[in-house]
Image 1 (tube, rainbow, N blue to C red):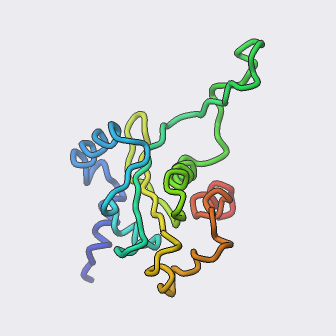
Image 2 (image 1 turned 180 degrees about the vertical axis):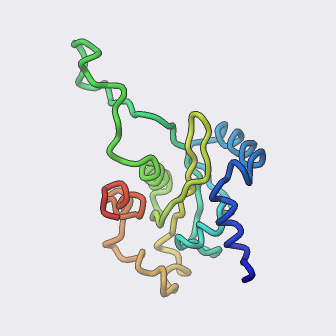
Length: 175
């Protein structure tokens, strides 16, 4: 049976180091120098983006978010004047996945848009990179779209902050 383009892309992304190697490595090194949340023209993984609901039309925005890998650090506020080792500041494991945190940062940066979904695009020794699909609920193209107009409902406002995206549900153990 003949395979389509999306099947080949999916197979390529199963083992990105083997298949994409130096191309991905050079892209990641340039991404590391950039801002935390960067708007991109087209998704890096078009097969995954379309599978998660992306369409190449007005109202859809894709942003790349970089997240530092490893444990988190708790805030210092309210923890002064005692032995630092007992304050529990470092080696703190977040209850959220890095992908969920990436979605929240994208939502904070683009407050007029809603997070639809996100996916992994790469990592190096220090950072992980995700692409987040955002939708403009006030766009006429989205309001007319039968499959996407559910996001214009006020009940779906700020859904990423309430843990209603796919990555958030997975992190909460609901999927």
